[in-house]
Image 1 (tube, rainbow, N blue to C red):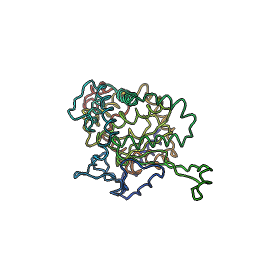
Image 2: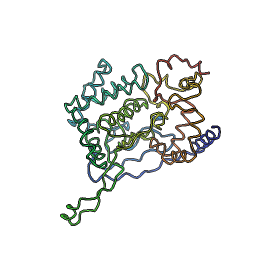
Image 3: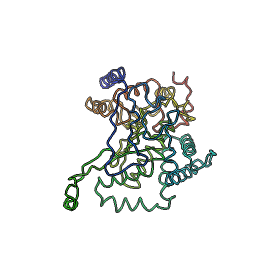
Image 4: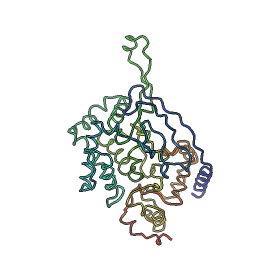
Length: 390
């Protein structure tokens, strides 16, 4: 255990001490088979940031946007918000959120995004554990289609369509749905992770110059997630979007989904037919409280809570981590050097711009605590005073 821990600390120390300077990133090619809503021009304003100091979770404003920017650097979503689809979905989800909260505490019209985010934060800050928040949010997602009068779609898809549909086609169907129906929530999106699909023979015989294969996107990427940037909170991202969305699509549609929010530039990828890791292993929860977090729980989510957890042995029973069911020694042995190298190359599963910024983020977590994004009983943790962690 000591050896594994020392190697891990050595890696973090080495990488975090040499954060890369900002560098330009190549704009992905537009998907051949669809045109995402709002992408009337290429995303060319600026690349995502990749240095430790200008990470979005630390308060820096992301620079990339295919939509016009306001004077303060925020995105102007007017062209998306006036869409009839956006108005209907915004009103529908706000109604479901208000039902969870029990009251509508925002005077803004129900068609405005800001009012929906007020209800989202209220759901996030309700009493109970992070798991309680995820369950409430999942009820909201599961209620969208029935509220629109099309609740019959998930069971038909799961029972009849999905078993008879090639994986690439099922993934592409979800790409089409999200890129066309949810820009109001996530901002402009594009299809990514393309695969080559063989062109039907009859098309090639009919059209002499028709290509042998066509590239079909299998996942979507929000260039600058509106939900994440507006919430400015990792807990809201993980507990009211990522975790419940993954469970909802799996349970209602039979579609595995791995959501990868990037806290460095607030982009986000939704990978369909990809099984997500257990939440306690997901790199998305390894993040401190955002610098601009407006949550009522911000003061209780910082360093002393994490220190108190260790001091009190909260979550550790007889030397066993209650989240993993393993001893710390077992976990350390399982974390081989090869696994650590793979994780580094993968940039912490897409939640950072590069290994250096992820390592720096982990260092911040180790020194200042992380945002609560795993199962913690907040009412229990709230009784622990900062002095108890000394």
